[in-house]
Amino acid sequence: MFTKTSAILSIAMISSAAVAQSDNQENNNWRLHPEFSIGAGYGFTKLKDDEFKEDEAAKKIFALVKFNEYIGVEASYIDFDEAGNDVLTLDADGRSLAVIFEAPLSESFSLYAKGGQLWWDADAAITSINASDNYDGDEAFWGGGAKIRLSENLDLRIEYERFDFNISRDEIDVLQQDDIDMDVDFASVNLQFTF
Image 1 (cartoon, rainbow, N blue to C red):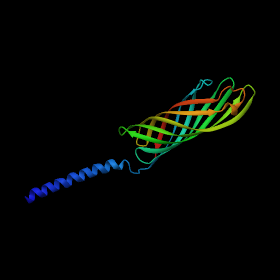
Image 2: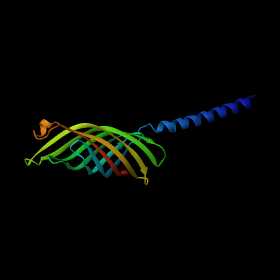
Image 3: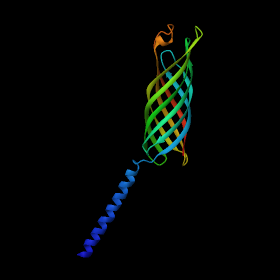
Image 4: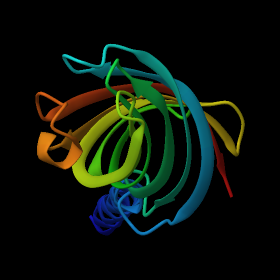
C-alpha cells in the first residue's frame, strides 16, 4: 500500500512539474523580452485622388522596439516622391509612430498588423503662378505585412501601409477647385536587423 501511494504521488508530482514547465514556456512569450531592430525599405506608392493619378517610389528607415514576441512600437521616416498635376506639385515626407502586433506562425515566418499616427510635411508648388508653400498635417494610418527570417539577426519584411493626406483648398489657392483628400497606398520591401 505504501509503495503504491508513493508511486502515485511521484507520478503526480512529475506530471504537475511537467505541466508547470509547459505553462511557464507559454507564459514566457508574454513576459518582457525586449529587443531592438533597425531597418530600411524601398517601395512604390499609389496615389488615389481625382487629380493625382500617379505611382511613385518611396523610401523609409525605421527603428523597432519589441517588448515581447507579440507587441512592439515602431518609429519611421518615409520619403515620399514628388507627385503632381497641371496645377499643383507636392513633395512630401513624414514621420510615423505605430504599435505592431505580430503573430509568429513558425520560427522563420510571421504575420503582423500595425496602426499609428503619421506627421507629414509637404512642399507644394503652384505651377500656373510659379508660387510655392509648405503644408503639414497629422493623420492616422494602418498597415500589415509578413516577416521572413533570413538569418539569426536579419529579417525580410514585405509590407503594405495606407496613409492619408488632407489639405483644404483654402490653404492652397483659389485655383485649386477642391480640397485635397489623397489616399496613399505604400507597398514596400524592407530589411530589418535585430541586435
